[in-house]
Figure 1 (cartoon, rainbow, N blue to C red):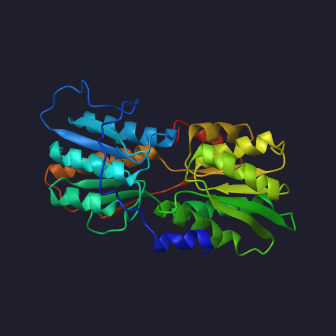
Figure 2: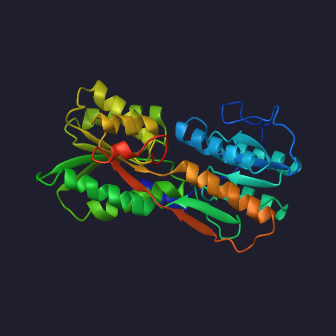
Figure 3: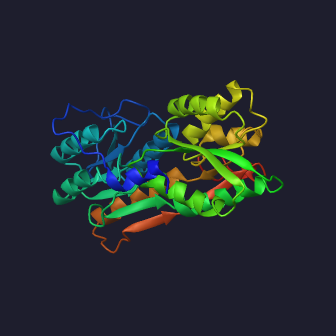
Length: 327
């Protein structure tokens, strides 16, 4: 695997020892004010970042389902910072929350936070992002990122069947996130079998739209003749599209994403982005909330990992998708 991914096995983010204060998010995903009374107690929804519409949907959906089940619910924004995440967990444990619906900041760095909650009798249910532990969460509800990107890669290859050489760029997500690794591995398990595909650059843009724009602008200077960009999420796909559009290459360079974000689905319908993988964040959020409720009600025979299938969205089937799911 390329050098940038080797770091995945070597390094993990370590929560800071000295933590600043934290507070629930004041975004539309929810805050601690005026939640109303409930006899079932409080559930915390801890999201890696709310600086991405996809994660806002995940947080909102988890909060909404918890409230439907009779709990008060509060969304916490970790801002992709393991130290903030650790501080949230301290407050959640002290605040006597009944359970945590958890979207981690880091596959390894978040394990200690989850274990601390579990040891304090606050069950943890991971959503979308995985943690590298079999006993730090009751269950992990995860998109099947590897299989999803295998299917995207097959579609990618098919778009260039009449070409003798294809130069492409890969934009990676956060290096400490298992989704980054799984999506890249799934993509390369297909594309690397055909020698005509040449990866001219591979760089992390941290799942961030602005960083993806900046990274691809730089790469374009060195490789103006690129044919395609594979992005590990849709925020980066949107940033890549902005860079390609500004460079006047929107008609030449094909962009592939992963998430199923509404803005990307719209651009697929307009034939401006080629494909994405629909992850179904609302399904993952609802499943996590339902399992938490069942666990608090005494259920214990719950699978440790629950995969959620990914569907490839293309111009041929885009009319079937919208609002972060299937119509």
